[in-house]
Figure 1 (cartoon, rainbow, N blue to C red):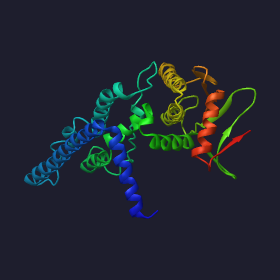
Figure 2 (figure 1 turned 60 degrees about the horizontal axis):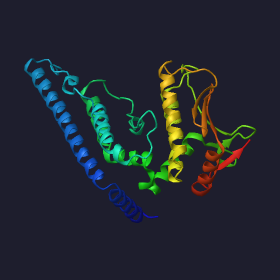
Figure 3 (figure 1 turned 90 degrees about the vertical axis):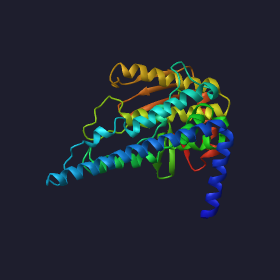
Figure 4 (figure 1 turned 120 degrees about the vertical axis):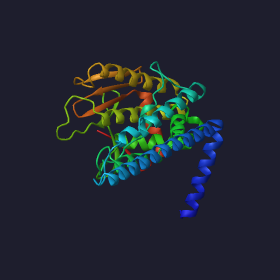
Length: 307
């Protein structure tokens, strides 16, 4: 597909999203405008402060003097501002659109993807703070809204939802083999088991769920939940939400530390068991059949390899 065709397809999809989301898309865009206006003010204050410090330094013949610390000019960080707006948007939209909440309420914070690069300048200095603002400008409340809809009512955007779900499924469970990309499946007298590897580096503590592990578990479970909702299997989707909430409550009591085989249950549909180097998703027959059908239909290049 050439660039023009790709751009047209992207534009058509964006219009379809706007049509599907209606007034919510307008609200998200208005919040994006307010968010970027706040970032503009933050940036202007930092640049103004820089000028004042330079002027004071020149008056004192001392070069550059940081009379006004840059950090004092940003009371709220760009990330805190985005999270506050995202929370407010979610609270406004979810009661009206969500099909699945679970007993622990709606989980949305993990839908905010905020992976700032490591600082290359003095922490707290002008360039550091301007870099944080520049990164923040790439974030979008409209995109956050799309993620909310895909998670809690994916049938509104079914094409986008299945792409997100299959991408997350592959990212969470697939490995590269001599045969190509595969999701290993353990079968036996138990339900099917698929594993999310929990890699550790250097001084990473053992028997503790790290932030990246937690994110992967949530991503994998929600991919399965999205697939279930697209097939009108609401009980399965609800069980995934309950399982994740159960996990969060228990791990919060132990500072994310766990025992070998510690398990969290999603009704009779799934069980999550934490091992030393992996999180094992024990899938009941209906969930495994759902997984098999979705992979066959939407990920033909990905193999389900039984062992």
